[in-house]
Length: 128
Image 1: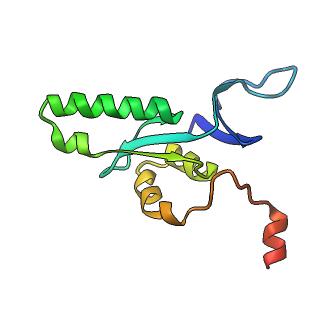
Image 2: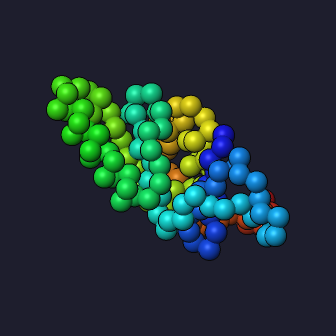
């Protein structure tokens, strides 16, 4: 998996892990910074089509659906699903790294925690 999301200061940052970190700061340059994130995928296969800022992804999905319907591919048009919001970073990265994972994400969406609430080890130790 080359693309990787991280949550920093309430924003989602997308990094290409193939890029070398800066020799000065030790950080990679980010490809995208957004407050909310969206992911478009195929309902049946779970294959990721696009991901990024919700406005761009919704626009891409509308255009693709319109194009597919015009070509007579109604099933393929209806199979494009867009999920957006404050999604957990680990779930986003699994969608990018595991083929078909988006189907599982969609089924589990109602039970997922708010994506911007970071869990830390002290929370787990206190609950144990």
